[in-house]
Length: 325
Image (spheres, helix red, strand yellow):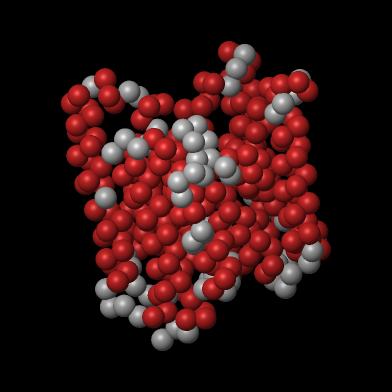
């Protein structure tokens, strides 16, 4: 039997606050949102979401272990992203045509990351269905993200048949998280608590997100969307921090090991500097708004692509670096 202490990725406080993000329901408190934003939107956009995207680029530049002799692939991904963003702007003079690509790719990226973190927990404890946790969870989360953007991607209200079919499909899709939770409860053992807390937090968040859209509650859709974005970004920064802490004693020597020894200071400076730069550059009065938008789209696309390569648990060195080998 696995010790409950060994079932946490780092520790109970770290996992519950930064991986399971158990504070996200606070955003549902009445008064914390209006019809267009929430009280945390500014901080979430500039000091959480923005740094979590750029930190991937920082990591692959500073750490050869994450590149792992795949420099050509990493550079190619960055160049393709730059070509996509630059080409779109050259052809139309705006970046709006990339909005759909960004939204859909980002939705799959959200789903894949949550599935990946759940797999980290599954490496530590027994129980659950590998297939459901890998593909079922991804499918459910991706469906919710696309479904809740129906007003942007398509107008379901204008097509009675499509609208009715989608509303029925909502209930069918909800059987997926129920099945994932049920398979984790079968043959219950107490060492599963860390994994179950993470799974429950993700499932409750996205189930609420879907139901808010299904029952046409725009104010709650906004709150759940903000919570989902915060959850994703905080979780990613936590995983990178966990990895950096372990790099003090494992992996190759060099720049990343030196950075890892002072990681919290480095991360704090990185977040504050990038966030403040983002606030300044986003202001139309400074004349860099378009350039900043393009740079962030490039960083986002590169982040999505690289994350699908550098964190694969099936690679023994990656699993070992995250403590789940």
